[in-house]
Amino acid sequence: MTTPARLLRGVAGTSRDRLAGIVLVLVATIMASEAVRTLPIGSMASPGPGYLPLATAAALGGLGLLIAMRGGGPTLAALAWTEARHALLLLGGCAFAAAALNTLGYRLTMFLLVGFFLGIVERKHPLAALAWALGLSLGSFYLFSDLLLVALPRDAWVF
Image (cartoon, rainbow, N blue to C red; front, side, top):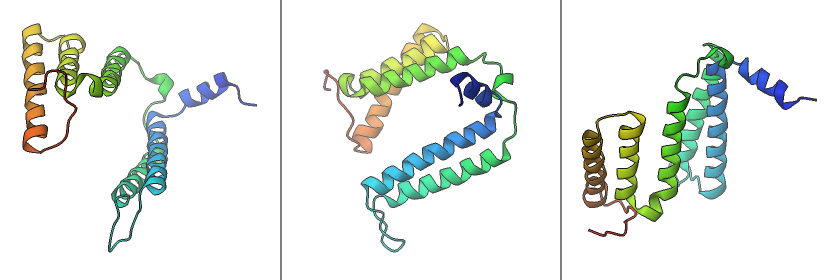
């Protein structure tokens, strides 16, 4: 019987490239199963809406398999996790943006996200972080919403 501690020791002894390849293969498997389950695939002559996601999943799975078979690099136990705090802040910011996008709207969510990334995570000058956050949130909204006609969630201040 495998205990959780023994499983964690086994994962910690795996090289980072091998583990990354295995994760890519798992993501590709989920992508492919969702594409096949929810969308018609079609054929080479007449591809359906699920054809490109399935092809992308196949490419991702193949590359993940190559990375897993090559499997070089240090083991996870040998890696120094000096950037763990930084990575967790980035992941937390992305999770916030995904959760708040429909509630706060695109412009406000992107303003807060870019401001958080530049002001808190990267510790840039507050005025520079504010200017970049404002410019990127409004500029990207104009590009996607007005020029490319992508329907983005609007916030309470519809302008």
